[in-house]
Image (cartoon, rainbow, N blue to C red):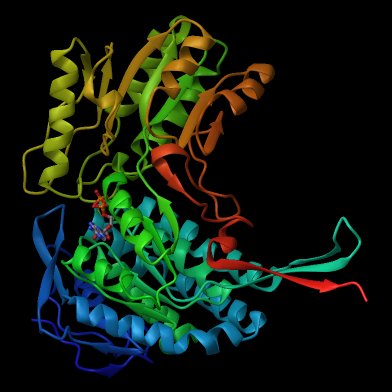
Length: 513
Ligand code: ADP
């Protein structure tokens, strides 16, 4: 069982805040020492606590199926205690000078960067991605801390005369108040920093509920935030297996003013309905079904390189992952052959092993879903160019796969694959390609490869998604507004837009004197 007795959280991540963990699982001495150092309690009002019922749950290494650690299993009452802390700290944090808030976030950036190897290893062992990709996530995730440390001091308003000339209008912003942040398991650090950094920069306090499959990175990161100087109650963390009970209890409390969620569309819809009762502000980063278009005039080698990133980065477990490849007839064979050759080179294994780029999927259900989708495609006429099946355990691995000749009606054209399966169809004209790309309820990101500038320009308006990678396979960047349209969600994270998700707008009228 876990134990973090009610210890002060002032120590470093590698310091005093840990409870017992199950030790080395399958890994090295360094891995066990790191796991021992991760806090395993709930962070409430600056103190690490056990769950009130004393329960814990296991965190599993998907590459081995073995237990890495046990962490506190919060009850809804624990979550409300976390909201108590966030509500109590809200006024002081909102009144803290923007420069001070920014400096704390900047220290958090420095600490995350300094602890890059630990954060990366934790993500690799609890989520499965390769160490190289996990290191990349630390760079990407930490950048939100630096970006929003800079945005904290640039929250500006407007001052003007109304059109009638009868008054002065002043538009200003203030923090929305306590926020509930719910994150998924696929980017354990970046999804947390992408929400916490703008919230804190804006002057909001938060309750973070990380995914139960990958809580260790968030717990370790929370300790870094405390070390960076985040005051007690400003960031609270509740790990739980009762995500619905915890979220419902916090959202039913009218002290909460905002919920920011990244996860599946069905859960997002539940949360939107719950948010209606207290008219909460919401940010929803939901599912995707990204099209990846390759036109006859594309640089095919560049398109293949982009496809490897858009499809196989993060083992395909990303809402931005290319889900449907549409390749114009003239380059279809060349693209499929070159992509297949590259995919055959991908090494599958535990993400800590040298040279591995495809780690395990997150759990058995994910492997079963990938297998089902491949079988469905094949039963409807698709050909397997490489891969196509699960890998025998231990661990939940699936072969990197390329399917060609996908036919209309195939399930993976409608459903998010969330795995290393590239599914290729062909098209004849730009109009047909665009129609196929837009034929989905989702609209997060599209990718398109073309050397025709005019076509590229047309695609900016004809593709219905919140983001477009034009001749690139990766769009995410802390300085840019990430987000989708249609069933892919509401709101934007990152960029100048990101902080406004956590700010209310107020307007004052002064009559002309
Ligand atoms: P995924 O399919 O990627 O696991 P989910 O939408 O199920 O996506 O999970 C994303 C996050 O939402 C996780 O932190 C999970 O615990 C949480 N979650 C799942 N169901 C609910 C719910 N009913 N209410 C609140 N949070 C939930």
